[in-house]
Length: 72
Image 1 (spheres, rainbow, N blue to C red):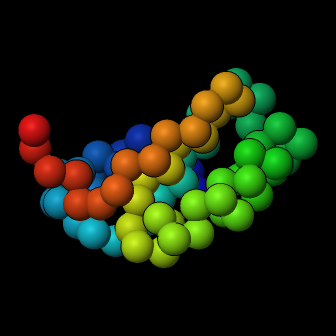
Image 2: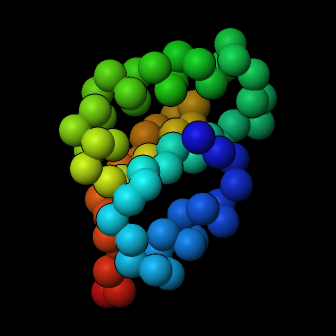
Image 3: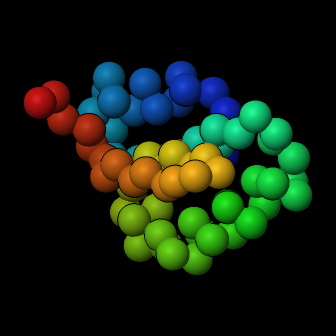
C-alpha cells in the first residue's frame, strides 16, 4: 500500500505482472478513513490482487487495473 504514484508508474513502464499495488488517495490519510476502504478492497478483490493488479482507492470510488498494463 502506498500513496506514492511512482510504484504504479514503474509497473506500467516495465509491463510487470506483479507485485500488486494498492494506492491510497485521501486528503485525510488516517486509519479511521483509510482502514475501512482497504479492508473492503482486500475482501472484494482477493483474486485480482492475488493475480496482479493496481488498485486505486479513494473515498468516492475504487479502480482496478489488471497487470500487465499494456500500451493502448
